[in-house]
Image (cartoon, rainbow, N blue to C red; front, side, top):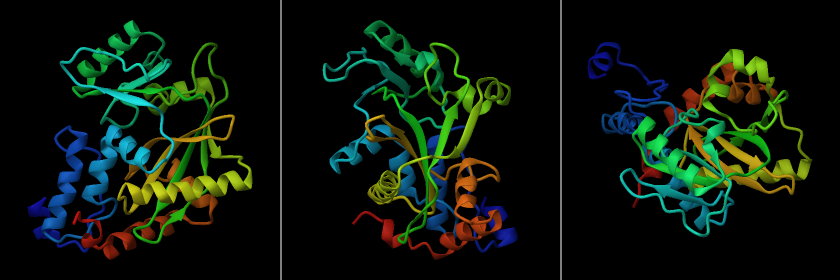
Length: 283
């Protein structure tokens, strides 16, 4: 990296990093390095990445601010799985740090303590990370794109829908659903603007800005929600530096607001150049 920077002398580094040396948690350290050498970059700052990468920490911070998140517990590697009494089934079990639906399948939702222990052990073995079990929330899968450093803008709420869900299957974004295009066609995966009442949409967009700020995010992010039939909105995950490829959800929701793909990329670069490190340093 240092050699490339010396050779090309970039005005800005366009950060599309998803992991470093195979570890998703290392990308915030790369960004920290860029800050140390005063190299402007796109996307989220190190503090925001660190917080958002830790799903348990994210939920603790948002709970403190009285923002709805599913009830949860963390099960560390090497410790006996004992479910807190407050945590009721069904539960969805996943890695506390992995992204991209790694380790998530229909079997991730468990209904008893034996299945919970088995799934926790599976996550430990497959991802080499602690497991997080959260209460499964039945409802619609809603994504909100947020962009900005201090002055924030939200894009059209986007919804993931499975129009041909197999009998008995749950409406969850599994790894297979996210990455297997043949399976997406088979189950009728559709992502499109969410049809929401205007007041509910306004409420979710304002909530998204609050969450973005509470988690010290910058650049751009996608917030993943579950919206219940009663109109309650639970934050599932915050995803700084989400997929921004053309025709993907983030770019599509921006386009729905009248922002072309070149304009979106220009905005991301402009935010990187104007980012002020001091605003995101813990004092």
